[in-house]
Amino acid sequence: MRRLELCAAILATAAWACGGDDDGGAGEGPDGGPAAVTWHQDIAPLVARHCTGCHTDGGIAPFSLEEYEQAAPLAPLMVAKVKAGEMPPWDAVGTDDCAPRFGWRDDPRLSPDELALLEAWSDQGSPEGDPASAAPLPEPPPTELVDATHRVAPATGFSTSGDSDQFICFVLDPGIAEQTWVTGVHMVPSNLEVAHHAVATVVPPAGQAQLEELAGPDGVYDCFGGVTVPGAYFLGVWVPGSLPFEAPDGVGIPLAGGSKIVVQMHYHPAGKTHEPDATELQLRVTDLEPDKQLVFTAIGNAPGEPLLLPGPNDDGAVEFRIPAGVSDHTETMRFPVELASPQRFPVLSAFPHMHYVGVDLEVKISRGSPAPGEPADECLIKVPRWDFEWQRTYLYDAAIDELPTVGDGDLLTIRCRYDNSVENPFVKRALDEAGLDMPVDVFLGEQTLDEMCIAAFGIIFD
Image (cartoon, rainbow, N blue to C red; front, side, top):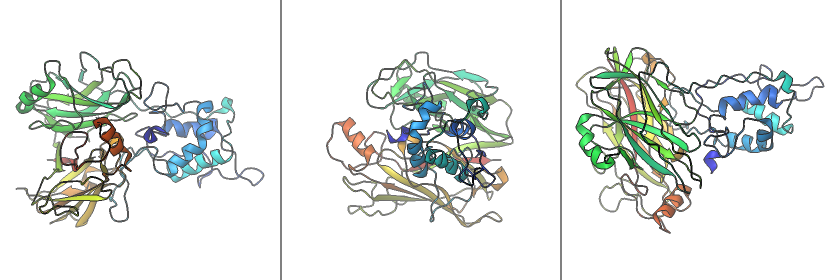
């Protein structure tokens, strides 16, 4: 599959210098020609930083890039996929009409200098270099949450098989009886060969009766769309190679006593039967109330007026409907912010979400009373090439006092674009799974052939 053809590591590292001269690239050799770029001296550290979170023996990718013999024949493909922006997977890409002010933390994409180095290596025939003088490889990212206070996993793992991806929800009880605050979250699959991504959702006591109906006594159920029981809220996402989520100093996510946590696993069996996976949820919690709290809220999924705006393919009334066969359909929703407080609240993160038909999502804000030095109008996030396979939380790379803010009187606009034609490979896959030959009209919902237009934001409150 395209998404697994090259570097799929989601390593939380900044762009590192990767050899060559101070201007980047390969520089000049002693004879005035291009300097030799070799695997052991230049490329192996680059691949370790950006690719081997997935492309490793026993990883989710279909092949490893850990060794020279594995990577060298694929050098032209590596260059092509990086240049096309397909690898490493990263959907939050600004455009001329929607460019967030800040970059993103843990952005795995190669820097221009790194790409130039990779391209020079490929152009030179992918030389190996001298293993005796190999450059040191970067330390791998941590795979555990430091000082985790709670670790909980399903009692029985799930064995995935077949050609179709599977979405399985596990209901986990961390055994926390009193109000606490989460300062760290991570998920650790036991079988990295099939674990594609995981989403953790908190379900407070008020929503657990409905959750029990879904999950049954064993606490495991099929769940494509996610968790929509009353009061449920997003907690975190895991993707291969990602670091544990660490809340900023003095910030915690509230967790009511008696809450349960649903971990939705996306499994990619790739036509094989695999050993069971029992992904462990790791939490760090404190019973000391922090100075600030991180609360997740969302906009989107408006079924009609006044929040849903008229669309290009409405049939009489304003409706959320993506017509069959239409390759460029748009739904737009506008949400006024009404708060009792005049305070403006920092926005730490964004989590965009659509299903298989979606191809583009953006959220913009128009502020009624901007903070000093803050623009009145701003794009908060843009994913111009939405890929359901690579969902993640995007965190702004800025200090708390520099983050974008939201406050009373603001207006948030979310716009989602869809391709409901057979030219969209995800639509073709969904139709195959449903036993259909041609697209059908798509509406809001939780199933494979339903859609969403939603973005969750992490807001920091005093």
